[in-house]
Image 1 (cartoon, rainbow, N blue to C red):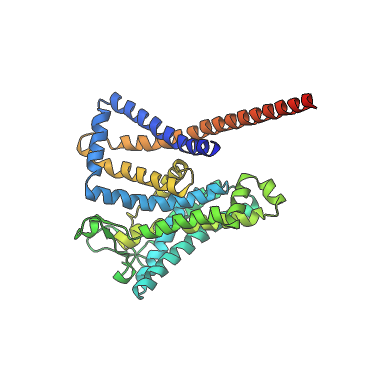
Image 2 (image 1 turned 60 degrees about the vertical axis):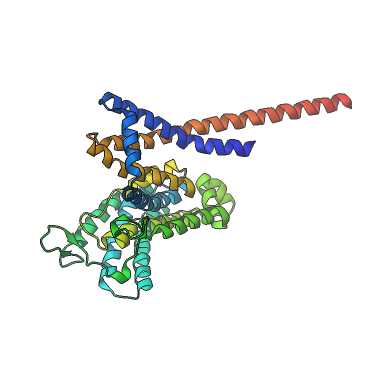
Amino acid sequence: MNRRRKIILALAAPALAIVFSLGVTALVLVVTGNSPVEVIDKMIESAARPRVQTLIVNSAITYYFAAVAVAVGFKMNLFNIGVDGQYRLAAMLAAAVGGAVVLPAVLHVLLIVVVAVLVGAAWAGIAGLLKVYRGVSEVISTIMLNAIATFLVAYLLQPGVLAETIPGSNNIQTKPIPPSGQVPGLSLIPGSPATVQVYGMIFVAVLVGVAYWFLLSRTRFGFDLRATGASETAAVASGVSVKRMVLASMLISGAVAGLVGMPQLLGASYTYSLDFPAGLGFTGIAIALLGRNHPVGIAFGALLFGFLDNASTALEISGVSPYIVKITQGVIVLSVVIAYEVVRRIAVAAAQRDVGRQLAAGAGNGGAAEVTA
């Protein structure tokens, strides 16, 4: 019974958040003179197209990496808000390295991924060191590091440094990665062009999800990490080094963050340019919250946000503002926090009632035994 109740409570918070956000979005649509039923029908109709389905999955792959990176910090009670800067700096340097060398296919891809992981971990590690040795909040330090990463990328992405100009264009990019460093995609429809293919990095995303689950649920390190996040005092009493866990968590979070730009870099653009996607780290925060930091929940959350992002194109064609989708996503973020608190209080109240019933039953049995004696 308790297990069933835990599952229901675990699903209740994201379900309430989604229902509430849809209700608010429907209200906004009605106020602006649009039919909520027609808008949802258009989005579903758009999502039925193979090209849109591919875009949804591809967005979800990228979002999944970002959300897992954030979730690692959440498990440790750390808020790594610097995923955005970590993945952009990692993608930029990995693209520069990938475009500067020629290696056998597997080794070339592996080199690019390793560089991205190491750069992401190193950049997040700065925040970890500041927290461990100077007590600086990781929220403040990672926000500041986001800004530094932005300016550092802007400096490096210049002709004569690590970038080159594109003839006939105002865009600037790193040297293109040769075919040996590219990851082929998967076709939803046989013979489909590269623009309608799922990123091959989907397999890496699955491996990251499995590794994340195994590390936190089946290893001593994962237990120590979760224990430290729940109570540093209790962890110290158990012999766990809080400083070591903080630094390790930030390094792992940054390493995963370094993978965020890899699907786009290795599966579509093959170079880092001025129009490389930004802001993905902040979306990852919302998805991690929605998925309750669980790898399966994060996957569903990533698919939902991928659907909202790509199916919204149909709204613009129909004359409906695509910002309606942004409203939905924003309300999800706000409502999921409120829903978690409501569900937490319900769970606490239910646990207190269970304890009360057990104490009452124990008192009754004790009284009966005393009368019998």
